[in-house]
Length: 241
Image (tube, rainbow, N blue to C red; front, side, top):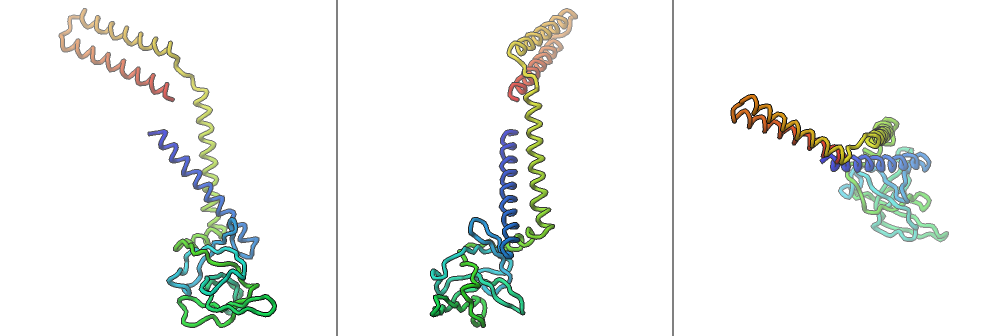
């Protein structure tokens, strides 16, 4: 039981460390890439509005990947830069029309699935970040946004990593103690058993010499047997360790 518990705790600790490492990569790549996190070429994005509902909703996490502009086609969902209320922001909408220009550039007309009309301004090739892979995690975008804050990074990344290393240090110290702990040899085990039997026989003889009743003698035998059993169990536990 103890071994199974140790395996489970170790597995959970390593999973936590791996997740912390991945989130750390996302946070740092986001800071270096204009606020766009990237992990092995895949960019997790937080949906900021319900304009694409029910395909995905505000607070969901979607995964976007860079793509060749000429691989894009109508009905693809793309993430791109646009200007809303005077601010340059990221947006994710569906392509409803493509215009090929003479200078090998392309313009894209986009529309949110939940919007009645297409976007007013076309999306230029230079504004496209990537194409949605079709994968999403409902509601997890809020978690990603929190992890990118200083508070979230400290609580969810730094503290778990510190606990992990403290746990590993504890295991290392316990291992050292176990290595230095003296083991009972087979000769010592036999000697302990022999002494236990001698004590049992001595008690039985003393009880008989004092003229105790048969019931008292039986109690003495049972008590001695229990002592022998406990001694053997202690020996076995030490050997298992």
